[in-house]
Length: 400
Image 1 (cartoon, rainbow, N blue to C red):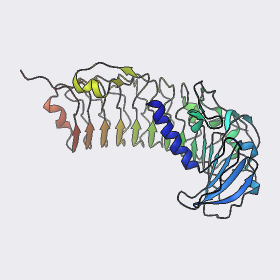
Image 2: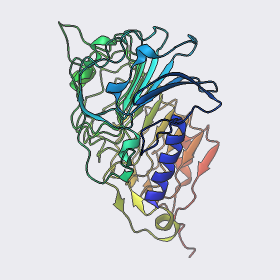
Image 3: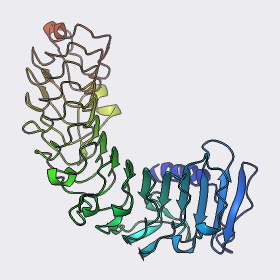
Image 4: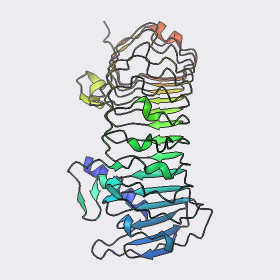
């Protein structure tokens, strides 16, 4: 089943690339009616898509073969450039973007680098405000050799000065690079000047980053969105406290068992917090529907009355697919503007009388597929705005 789902993902993604390379001859197919050929050379081809999403799509065997100087960027209203590679280079330190038109503001570079990205790669991109630098399709299959990848992939290293040439960057996506340390390129100072001071959105999900520290974000004081999901982070501590303008925070799928202290106490602008499905995933045995439909739970076990201090403006909180057993009195006291709370697929068996105290704006509460057999009436008296309550899949007490 897993291989089937992955093959579906690959098929969908490959179709969206609009690249049809013949694996035997390495020659590209003719453009479809929704594309206009705007450049071609040995091992590369650029097309302009005439249907949404409008973009320039420059596929290549290797990024070193791409010659953007030979591309006719004729429509200056189209600001997106997609560069998918069929084979990754172990190391590369030259720019292919010199002379790129200034109206190109968003660039996706997919599957082009295997081990190291040199500092000169982004030269010429001084005007871009959005960059994807990801290894996506190659996670599942080698598209050149057409076989499944089973061996661990090496972490991609980013030169510490990589982002010095993109001072206007506001959105950065570094997913699926298997980085096993927080990338120094995000905070390394050059001549006393830190990069990425205009950054608004940062995606570091699906890596192997073991920890985050406050100094890593010292230059990103404008950051609104941070996604560090599916890394190897064990403890938040005070690592996020400098991100006072953060509005959305995704920490799903890390290795956090307990929210100790008050790790979000300065994040007063935060509106969305996702803490779902912490690792490692554990198998559980519960009676009835509780264990049959969802037999696994995440590793987060403890939330405390101090865990959410400071989150005065939070509106959405997701803590589903975890192993929390107890909701203590006052746990959600600070969350006076919370509207949605997802505690589904857990092990909750006890909710203390004032467990939901303070949630005066809560309109949706999901407690489905926990281990609840009895809830006191007074628990819900603290929820004057509640419109939707889901208790499906719990374990009702048998009548006497």
